[in-house]
Length: 380
Ligand SMILES: [Zn+2]
Ligand SMILES: [Zn+2]
Image 1 (cartoon, rainbow, N blue to C red):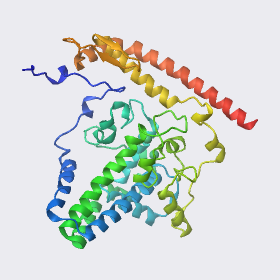
Image 2 (cartoon, rainbow, N blue to C red):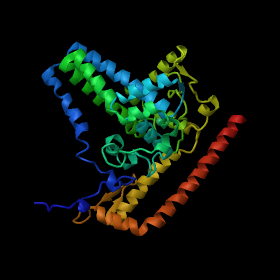
Image 3 (spheres, helix red, strand yellow):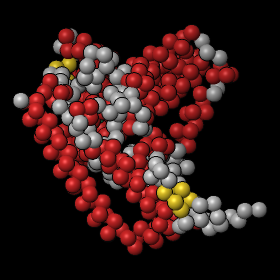
Image 4 (cartoon, rainbow, N blue to C red):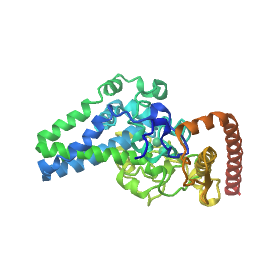
């Protein structure tokens, strides 16, 4: 029988960035999240009525709009303007998706853009796919939020009220679903749509940073994914979005469907939405990977992975394979343990960090030069 290993002796799965102790799954506080998934299975007992299907569709797409247009494009990025009543509607609608309050959501999202794919990014897939999808929400680290990150909205008492009582909106929708569609309406219409909505929203943080194409040489790993755009009313054009965050439109070209933007445009004709920001044409034409712009984001990602692989290789008998990953040799004692890795990193931290930083500085300089060259050639 294999000997039992304690936590620090378990083989470590290599990711480019490592996780801190407060970034571990909190099993107790994750119970409601898991329970919501299990409740969906009750649909086998309640059956699925036509009313429940209609509720599912209305609640999925309706609340997705409040998340994409409200929580994301308005509260996080201020890419258009709203009157105070409409602002409240967007906040309450967003809260009904059970993704916490607008201030928590937007302040964390602003952080994601500020520190994309660095150690301070809240949900970089460089810490693992599972982490970027749900791990970062199910640990203790990100429960709180910083008022300084969202000063522009924290001043509204009605938003602070929604934030403090973020359970009111989802439970209102849940009770209405029960009233309209009975138990099937509650289980399939409300709970199932909420769970699917969660994973579709999380896919922007996870899938749209690992799957799809990169048009712009941003300093993160964001990508444009048709699949994610389909699931999220146009949020899958995530590389576009990282390139020009202030835009209310994330599909930059006519073929990049962006239903959130079309609805916002419609609301602007009714006068409910104002000053929809769009990226200048000059910017859309510059910085494209296709034109030879230096792809800083992918460089950083590959560099981080290579560094992690080299670190892993140094701690035990291993070889670096032809895609730059450390392959552990199959012999006793060859597995890297958390303890060994921690000791090694502590010993080499300063020199490794300095080495990485100077390489990144040089690469960034190169990126600046190549962009300048590109913009000069556009002027010519
Ligand atoms: Zn964003
Ligand atoms: Zn992102």
